[in-house]
Amino acid sequence: MEELRVGVVGAGGMGSRHARNLVFRGPGTRVVAVADADVARARALAAECGAARVYEDGRQLVEDPEVDAVVVASPDPTHAGYVLACLEAGKPVFCEKPLATRADEAGAIVQREVALGRRLVQVGFQRRYDPEFRALRRALSDGAVGRPVLYRAWHRNVRAAFAPDTSMAVLVNAAIHDLDEIRWLSGQEVDVVHSVVGCRVDPSLAEGVYDLQLIQLGLRDGALALVELNLSAAYGYEVGIEVSGDRGTVTAGLPGGVVTRAEGRCTRAVPPDWLERFDAAYAAEVVAWVDHVRRGQPWPNAWDGYASLVVAEACAEALATGRPVRVALEATPPLYGQEDG
Image (cartoon, rainbow, N blue to C red):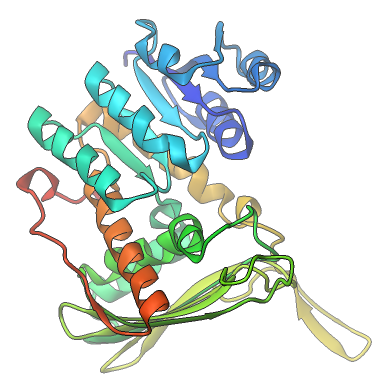
């Protein structure tokens, strides 16, 4: 098996995690370059991973002839530019979510990939690689609960991991996971955003920035979805979903692990953040990405990143206007017709 030489753009929390997973868990891969605006941070990660080259500018890394494929884990507003640079260079790219911060930017990526006639982009929707969520999807595919009619999801953080300046930023950075999750589990596109309501839980946030949002969606097959997004839940990190069908329900993401009974209480531990909760999923997705690069079928793909952003923008409009919003999503291009999992 030919070794895949990978460059990592972004040496922060997610970039470091992906780099370490590639080094220690990714068969047949080698991290050969790291780029970050903080050069000292890039050097530290490069030394840990045995990378030979360090760049301050991510585009220089993309252009490096010794780099076969690229991981983009830089700040959200830079994603689209780096991904387009990878497409221009003809290099496979794993891009942390979101694919872009606006749907038109993600649409440009889709258009460029369609013009190339090759799928080169994989988006970091790691829930698709979580064992619990994959088991739930298999149960749905097997008809365990009959025809799904309601998807009720929850996504709770101790506090916001970033400083959102708009409610749209909350949707693009956090709710984007939930929007993709519902598309993936249902196999349906979102037809309408019925409503989005929000409130400010963290008083330090600016007026009009809602860290608690309730999102109600209608899917093309008539099923409904409800997402509770709470960036300031305080007690821990929990992500889960209950799917109700016409013959029963199936749930993923309930508290698990060791049960402690003491002093009149029965408790279970709750993970402190997404890094602990999805450790196995992050490792599985980069291992899968390496395999996808070799097979030329990255998944989840650029269309998944684009479609979720279209829904996120519709959610932002519904939140701002208080009115339902139809989701204007064109037909999926044939290039994206084959799904991996």
